[in-house]
Length: 317
Picture 1 (tube, rainbow, N blue to C red):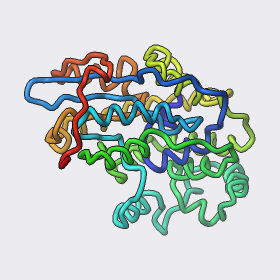
Picture 2: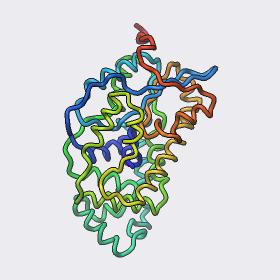
Picture 3: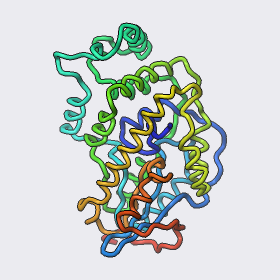
Picture 4: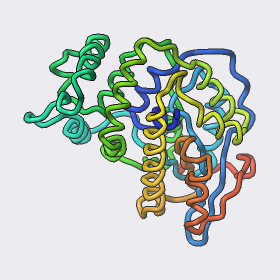
């Protein structure tokens, strides 16, 4: 069920959510190989697919080294969605999606008992209630989670890969725009949006599972796809309500479809290969992930080790 909240890689908004739900834990193991697949098809650029994590529980210098090696073996680098520096137009578009029109309010979508819970939630999150009720549930769930008290965490793959890709003069892009990424969250059915918000509010009083991020990071470090698949399905915290599984399932299925459509679009397919594609771990493991969908689209997919690919000098050097 972490797939819905972390998506195991994603936008700046989901990154904030992840930062609020994670804590530093035990000493990590060393990154031996990471997790990579090759997807190839006649007439198309080779794709090097890498499951990513939005946050990490430690400085992860060993993971940094593996990410740099992956970047040096690709001409182009693509991540799931932007995580920094939105344009003013993007910010305005997201704001329009997040805020109710003047004639509407969050209160119109909750019963009386739930309104009491929302008042308490706004107070604990230190958000004026008049502001709180202007925002839609999917946006508030992220904002509230960002206000939870939690130990600090370290930036995940997206920011690290973006910085290194630019430093290596690689072609760099995102599968989804910031606006598309927010539309993904907004597509959650209203009933499930309300459940997600109320459960986010309850986390002010819950103990979180601090071990899960460490386990996911170490699964990746050790190249253990089976363990990564199992841990990606673990509950976010004890006591998750059954409806949150519906939130997770919808977010995963809808997001995987969006990412696949973007990956197969001319915008990405026209990039010079090999192309390193970083997508959330939840979208690259399991029977309904992007990998079998790529096979259905005519690709041959196989697990690879990075040292099978030669390093590519930076263009212009």
